[in-house]
Image (cartoon, rainbow, N blue to C red; front, side, top):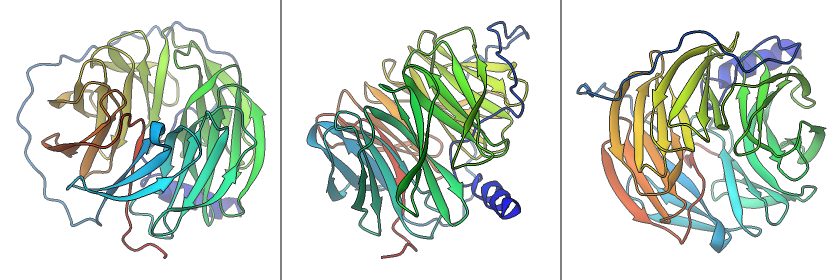
Length: 361
């Protein structure tokens, strides 16, 4: 069973935009990170040669409209709302099975104010299960396991990380990681999870996910600046960490946790999404989104975004970013050509990409 599980994890790591770093973390890490670093210049930006891509399944953006207690399903690239799904009060974060999954459509939404986590399934993404054993569930990420996914959920109020078996629809474990457990990243290759303690986190707790249903704390990282968002390359070699107090994103070696390079973006906090060879970075207060060569940190394209566009998602075909302060969804090509901006709600917080094609009814 362990060999089968490892095979599934290695395969599906290529489908998910989040992964995490580090293999052995037996003791507390200090803040030094003394390796000399490189700050990548933001200019000039060279022209991009468009690469040919194979046709992909139709994409849809799933957007949480927290003041309206709904998830909106938005057709891409038209921006047309095709579904409006009622949810518990103040839905915030959302994670969805990637468009290439093809074995049953699903998404998971956290509602911090209601203390609920909701599972959506089927072509129309109807709510099928509410998990109410939370105080303030915030970030949710999907962990691929044999036969499907587990949902990893942080709870700010309790300082915990919970695992939900989505196939059996039950919580399998809850572990205390520290006060204000917030942003979360998964390394599917090295079988670890990183949890930032707060929206402005001075420390990251590192857990082993060798047993996905029952993660355990194995270490702690203090990077020397306030951390906001976390994301990891699919090969586990890079950890992308955005800042709550700096105008740049720091990229760490996923194994030894030393600084590889830094990329200037704009006023904090920033967010990051990885798709293939590209990293996409946003500064909501700076009104900017960047496309970065993930191997080198070189900025290859930059575009304006609606003010307050913090959250984003990317899948190799589209890049989307939602504005919490303007209630919009901006839709771009993979090389940040703006296709359109649509106004959806008073506040659009989080966005994920999904596809109805090839899914079960």
